[in-house]
Image (cartoon, rainbow, N blue to C red):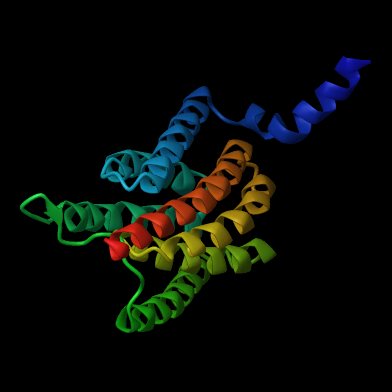
Length: 214
């Protein structure tokens, strides 16, 4: 009786992995683990967010290119590049004090964020058109979430508290999207990402409040 229930559920959630090589499954598991570690380090406001995130995104770039998920591949490539920038930005110090502590988004950064969002939508749309893959409703959602994450990653590299809001919105949308695409482990990763992002927002908000009150 139990087996009759478990087997269909197992096939529903993980049946697609029967088509994947053991190497690709191992790579996805590794990328998911490092991705979770990276978001946790971001919550803790620790520089380790970047090396763990860079390895995770590099793996995902390879897998997503292989699986022709171009929008997702582009955003992970962008994550990698912005991680290099963020790592450099975060480590700048004057004595023992960080030159770029947690802060709220400025008016100029808000304008840049809007521009980056629109640029991302246009850019991803052009990529899908070029590869003649604008053939599914997932392409529309993929384009939208890519733009959200583009802005979120840039704001995180700038150490702006509001980046968590973009992560939360993008993570919630990504959960069913990745499951539909057959990446169950990645979908589960985004469920955990959502909860960490909520706690991350609260942690950064509290740290900023304490710094401003000092």
